[in-house]
Length: 379
Image (tube, rainbow, N blue to C red; front, side, top):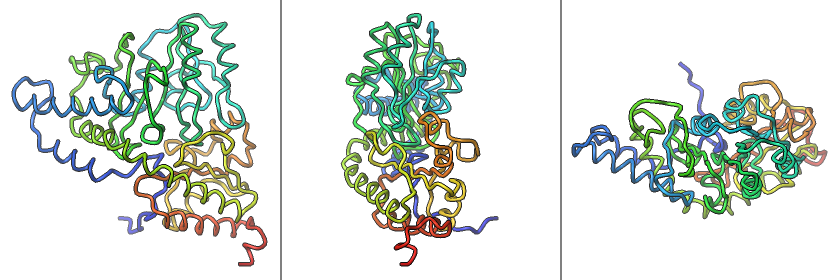
């Protein structure tokens, strides 16, 4: 049995945010319920009321109607349902999408991005002009490795002009940006609870009611026959509470942006060769993709972990892989820089001393690698 002390400075919110105490409270309340949400007796109706209250909260988070929300096992399933539930004449996905989108459409061409990590709308327009209609296009709202915000509303307008459908993976955006279904103009929107201080294992696909999806999971009549299987009552209750809390939690984003900027500024002051990937684009306040050329990301992650600081090497679901990040490759980042890129992400329980601790631990890594500026080395 391991006796290692877990990291006490958690800076990996983009992998999974710590469960909010009020979310835990809602889940404990749901644990006290007995029955199946599909049962018509009083016990079942109480369970159904909890599910529907959560559905309303999730819908309100994105400005949609409750009937549009399909509960899933998470963002991956939501993305898979969106990409496989329709039968488009053609499919296009951006080159920086999450693996769950790329795996759902392995033969689809990739929409390129520029050096900042922003999709090229001109390339999208050119592809749509030649594509058979209706086409399905998938563009994420916030990239999970760089935090770069994509022009989804503009992409949706282009796609609709050509009679197509736009899917948006908003997993990394929920709770970190205001979300309005109507302003974005999308047709399908993926969400995941554990990115916004909810539980893992539950997510949602928000669907334009005009679309008819072929379900991935067939069974009973749950989720209006769009996703079979008894609903995850406890997870859904937590998701609903997290969605209800999210607008209030966004009030802390300016503080996180200041801390992120300070982290990047101090890191680059310590080691001039350090690079902030995506710094030239609009980014969410809570994420920094910081590269230290010459020191492998895996080495940095392990050294930081030993110092009690938790971060990721790129996307958490890909951290164990040693190949180059497809996102950074699509951006044209020099391989020597890309291999040294880590992801630092902040959230609702982050305190300013966490930034101090990260900078000190990361500076020690740079010092051992001989990458500190001379004045810092002498300090």
